[in-house]
Length: 67
Image (cartoon, rainbow, N blue to C red; front, side):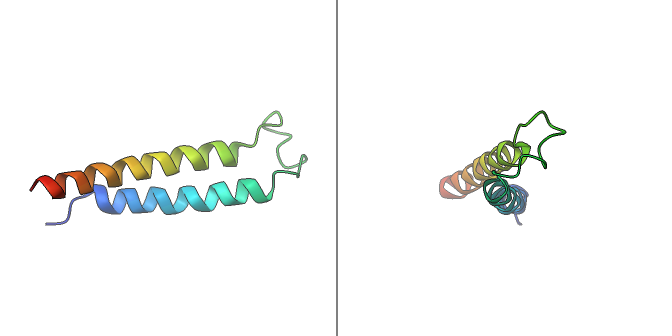
């Protein structure tokens, strides 16, 4: 049986990488981030999603090693 943490971790890791890269590419576009008070939300949320995805993958693979 497939552990649900693996697909969830992969999804959040991939989406987090995409959003983080988009945030780093558009870091110089100040007009885009005017509504969010000049804060690059894409970088912040991308990194948080990446961290969450990696934590899910870590726990999924740690469980497999014990079994």
